[in-house]
Structure formats: structure tokens, C-alpha cells
Amino acid sequence: MLHSGAKGTLFSARFDAGYAQLATKYRVQYKVKDKSWFAKRRIRLGTYLSCDFIPTTLVSSLKEHLMHKERSVVLLLDHLTNQGNFGAILRSAYYFGVDLVIHPKSESVGNTKARVESSTGAFSQVPRYIANIHQAISQLKELGFWIYALDMEGNDIRSVQFSEKIALVVGSEDKGLSHLTKQKSDTLVSIVGKRERIASGVLDSLNASVATGIACYVACADMYKKK
Image 1 (cartoon, rainbow, N blue to C red):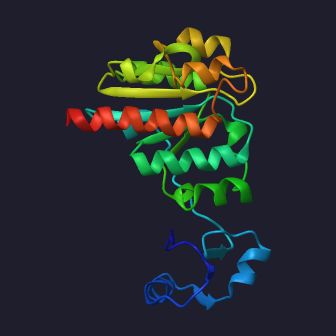
Image 2 (cartoon, rainbow, N blue to C red):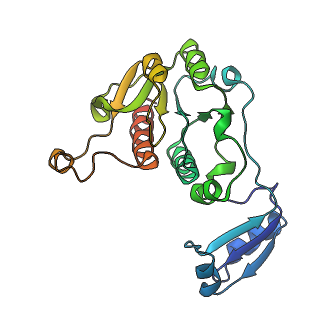
């Protein structure tokens, strides 16, 4: 996604009049490169924007951003460690209509290449709020949100009756949710797989970004049905 604040060059594998118009509109250069140029850089989509900075949408007040919403889905990231997962989660959040992504300061450092590329443009589009997760949960409860935390021991997310204001919490890839986060959550939910395959011991869980994408889909779909 191009943004009026981006300055740089837009590359594509073939000439595209639409891309050329976008480049002119946002005042960036437009260049066509062959497939080998993209292959060397491990760029699979055939389109690449190189720019000196990527604008982000940071929210300064949780209350002001959410207080007037009758229905909303908010996502909280409880100390993710993988930058690629962070970006992929932003992509899912944007696609499914999450209103806000909240994460601690430890996850806010820099627009790293992995998180920007894996978000495929959503990094500059999804509103984010940087805060202590436990304090954010308390604030969300004051605003009428019900806290649903992803955990393997939780209820099947497909059977959950969601509230009109939904806050989804995702734990770190290796440690999951912290003990205090579990305590402060209202309901634990899980992504349930095929029982026989889980019992086989080959694998018993999903990648954090995949699980979060599924949870965002289920929660947002439920919200859309109520509108």
C-alpha cells in the first residue's frame, strides 16, 4: 500500500498503468524489473516499494479511540518475539477489520524489514496503541470490553457467544499467555484442530500468526452479524 508520506521507488515485474498512476500520485519513482531481480531479493509478489520511512498510525488515547464505538474488536499482543509473526498478524487484523492493535513498548522498536514485509502494507494502516498489556486490559474493561484470551486449554472459539465489544489477547510464541494475563482475562478460547491428528503427537498447536488470524476472522464475523 502506498502512502502519501512514503518517498522512494515502486518496482513491479511488468508495466502496470495503475501502478504508474499511483507512483505519480504519491510522488515516488516507478521502475519495471524482470523476474530475476525480484527472485534475487526473495520478493514473491512481483511488486516492491522501497522507501526511506514508513508512516504508522499510533493512537495516543485508548479511551478517545474506542469510547464511541458500540461494537468493536481489539487485539492485544502479549510479548510476541517473532517479527514476522507481528507483521502477519497486522495483515490479518487489517483484512478482517480489527479496530486497534495494542502491544507493549518492547514490541514497538523500529519498522523492521521482517514485520513490514510480512504485513504486506498493513503496517502503516492498522491503528496501534503502545501500553502495558495488563493496564490496557483494565482500561478496556472500563470501556465495556470482554477479554477473550487465546489459550490451548480454552473453550472452542466456534462455540463462544461473543460480546459486542471484543478484546482478543494473544500470548508469546514460546511461553503463551502470562499468568497475570490469564487471571485478568474473562474467557479463555482455543483454536481446536482435528482430534486424531492432535493425538498423534506430530503437532498440537498452530503458529501464533495463523491462530490469531483465525481468531480475528471468527470474532469479526460475529461482530458483522450483529450490525
